[in-house]
Length: 228
Image 1: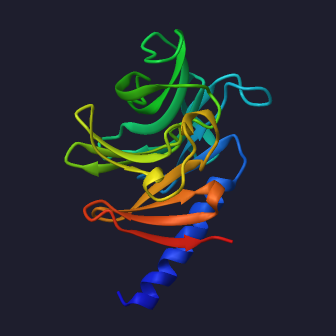
Image 2: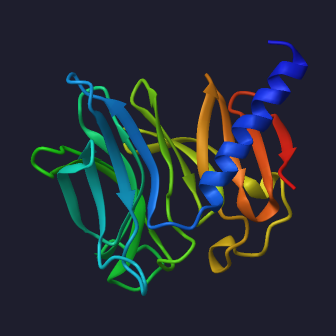
C-alpha cells in the first residue's frame, strides 16, 4: 500500500473510530454477524450503573429483532466481541470488589471478561481497581492470538497487552503527551478505543485531544491524525 492510500485508509478508519468514541449512547460497539439461517445476529454491550442509565449493564444478543439471550447484573458492559469458540468477550466495570489496592474496600474494578453465553458464567476475567466509576473504564478489548489480549485503559491513559493474567507490554500516553501529576484524578485524555490494523500496529482514539494515533508495538513509533 502506498503512502497516500495508507493515509486515506487511516483517516477513514479514524473517522469511524472517532464517531464510535464520541457517540453518547447506552448501547456501545455492537458486534454483528449472520447465522446459518441467514438471520442477522447482533451482540450489544449496554452501560448502566448511574443516574439516567439502566440499573445494570448487560450483554444482549438479538437474532433479527428478537432478544435471544441476556447477561446482566453488572454495572456496565462496553465493547463486545464474539470469539471463534462462541464465547463472548467484553470490557466491563463493576463495583463490590475487596481487592482494592490503594483504594478503600469495597471498590470498583474495570477490565474485560470472557463469558459463556449459554450459562452466563464468567470463564475468564482480567481486572484491576480504579478510583471511581466515571471516566476510568476499559471500553475496548481485542484478542491478539497466542493467548494475548489488548485493551485501552482510560484510568491510566495507556494501551496494555496481557497474557496469562500478566501485563507483557504497555504504551503510556504520558510518553507522548504532557501528563498531569496523577492521570487517575482527572479525565485527562479519555483513551477509550483501540483497534488492530496490522500485526503489532494499533490505532487508538484520544478523545480529549481530538486525535487518532497509530502506535507501533515493536518500535514504539507513533503516527498522528488530527480529527479537527
